[in-house]
Image: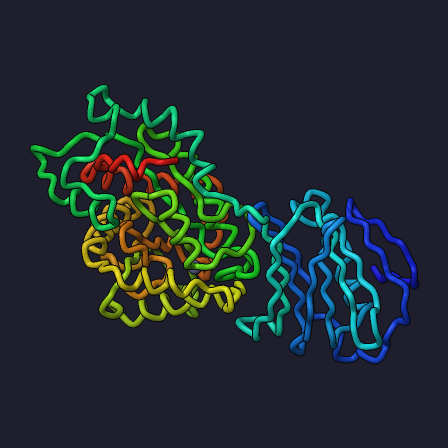
Length: 441
Ligand SMILES: [Zn+2]
């Protein structure tokens, strides 16, 4: 629908008001200054606005108070194109944006004024072309108090922690055994030390971090009929979360619960923040040959990939940060170093056990792409203290499997199978009590 935009026009779209500021409309940039796309990704965690263009946009930004607003001046972009692209993009229920105004500030500068619903911490940065995308200017609006993944779990953990116990003093107080330390490697080591005879019963909730692959700017693999990996993985992970939460003694958290981008290192950090016992990343990948099919399970390798296909897949999955749009200036290098410094050898053994259990369960509902757990350098599996697996549920590039991945009943079966594998691992490796210091929150 072509929209004729007049100067000083005031337009109201579905909850979002959007005002064209006074100023001369510049036509000079229409040729190369037109945007390729403008996307808004609203989420509780943060709202992202992405401008995609053929050229790198030069920008300046400024945060103003009373009322809270973010001003972004952009060079090399055509105003009319910004206005047309903004049409209907801001939703009334956006957690952070009240409205967006755009106007010609100076002949070559388009000024964007984002009126905010609350105080925010902005991150404005550019991303070089990656994947299918051209140059991007990204405006991330974070709350000043970050959303805490622990909060979502507290409601369930308080009553259930008590309920999960079997009445023994050990379960009620969850004090640590003398040799149990809150250090990351302590839990896995303590778990291995338990022989079948002296193995303790589960004395606290077993927490599973579920990681729906991709999201937001990063669609993941796309099937021939247009299904996007990010939607399929979120849907399966949500079903799996429900099933885990219904299982006595277990609870789950999602590293993302919506269609927005979460950097790979953040996913790991979140799982560690809730002291997850397991990390399960859910994917549905693609291969150039449409006949490739079947489920597979991967774990981290510190020494190189178990096959060239596994290495290729890890490279693709690790590219998620470039396509999804990570702010390189804000990358936590301290965290990256800490994660690399800690030995992961012990955890990898547990990851393989978990991987085998899940792969066996998947074999009951789908062809297996490969009969054994594979290893490669997946960035998302790098928590040094949490057994972690990446499940390729099926090939979204295979037309038959794409259809099944979109089928509700099949998604349920897939979630059931992964849960069976997790429970099998849980039965063999019940969670150890934690040191009191680790139970805060
Ligand atoms: Zn993937």
